[in-house]
Length: 124
Image 1 (tube, rainbow, N blue to C red):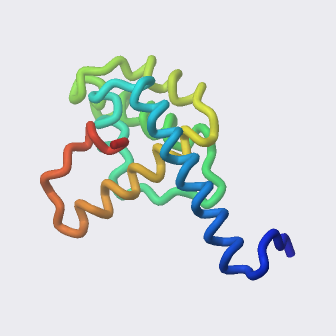
Image 2: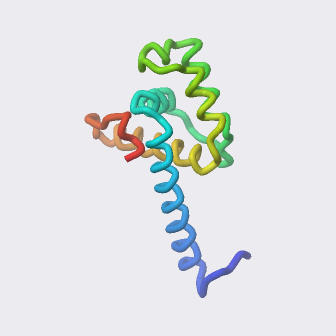
Image 3: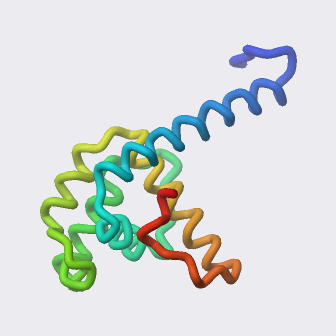
């Protein structure tokens, strides 16, 4: 057991606090790295996607690449799909995890009835 606190609950709360802080920092980095259209395209493509617990660096980029090639994603969002795929592949694990988290939160909110959400603002 990896005990670092007096009880397991304290340890879990501390770990989650750090985790959410790291996700927030990664979202800040992503907002400077991705355009609003690129963020919206990522959110669009990931609708209904279930992420593996051990998220791969290429899980999101492969979906974007396929959607650009097969579904016209680049034209729909006026983006350069190749550049977006390369940008995603160069991201670190925290940034990819933050994207997955933002996507899940966005589509959960939509599923709960919040249909006025702007996918371009999913990292806010």
